Image (cartoon, rainbow, N blue to C red; front, side, top):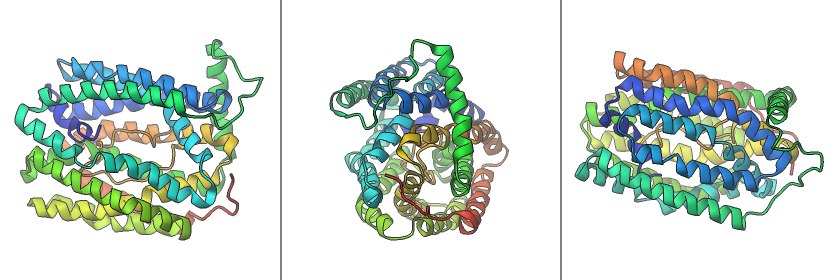
Length: 403
């Protein structure tokens, strides 16, 4: 995935898409997820975590066939829409991870869960960029997507075989064969979950939603601007991705230890605030070294932000509600997109509430970029300033940590 997703926008453009179409492709996945997340959260809490993770893994692997055989950007959009329909594993993965970690070690555990994949994929962005420069975006990415399909099937099999359930399935759980009843109960449970959410979690969700909105605007165009306006090659962008991933890997475990010992609220405030100037500076970048400076700061901030925010969400939500809450607000991922990232089109951190701002941002992003290439980063800078202020004013540590 790290070989392919930083270059996904180039794939859309190479198959006849325009900047506006990149936003439409991203929006298709999030729109489908908006429909499915309430069902995912309800089923996760009612029927358990493991089976839904494995089944969704098998189905998501097959969606890559649309990328492998795509002849134009509309086929890619069909694939992303179907991927959105099988995002149902994300609340389950978030819930089973939080269930498996004691509160006092949650920051470290979440950091390890992110560091291991990062360490395994350090050179992936560089390899992807090299292959694109050598063989072209379409040919290189078709082969990469084919390998992703195979490895996703393997991943789903491993999860099905080795993951252990962390909740007891109630005897009264709704039968999945009764689809209308499941859908009714699912959407009803979302309303109940939102009513339950404490004030602190609402404001944290607002910060996550605003950053997700700005990421959806600017995320797909980092590489488009870097290649088109600054003049970097795909290989150079891949090298930046390697540096970003390596830095997060090195900082991952120390960041997790810090999260367990220091105020998560303070880490979130400092982390968001530290990205304001680098994001704004990107539109003035002229060389590889300028972009590298931006990458170093944002990657360092992300290494601390992601485990801190996820741990704060997990601490704030009891085990029996995690599936539904995480289907509503996601796992609690705060991340500023950039080199080595997937492009801001939604992902494991997504939730029902976040889907709406991401859809709006995805639809608007291409038009904003076409009107003025600098405007997406100006919007994101303003969003980060706003989120810093909201975090200072309203986010607090939970008084009681739930197991």
